[in-house]
Length: 143
View (cartoon, rainbow, N blue to C red):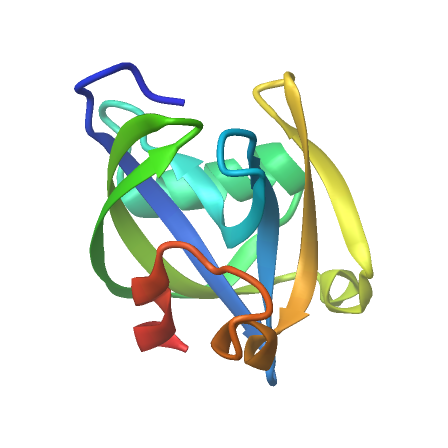
């Protein structure tokens, strides 16, 4: 999580396969709520957002990306675990280079070695119906 008063720049990859998308599962202890978002992560100083996207997928789930296309920029103001957050998200559409990722049920990965996260395929209608929560909500404009 980011320090107070700091804006985080993220590169996230929207991977779609028919009527489902590949997302990571998160949990907000303060709201006691599960949510989902596209995979990716923080951009390091001196690194392009596209390079950050590829590095993050490699580090987190050992996946190579292909067909990477820039979708747009999203500004996300949110409350997580009772604290204000502020992100600038550079969103890319992309595909997995290795077809094995399309047949996965789910996989567990650790971000920065601390927290375990689950990544999985979820049908888009489950987000649109309100059954599951996709963040930030503006993601729907890209689906």
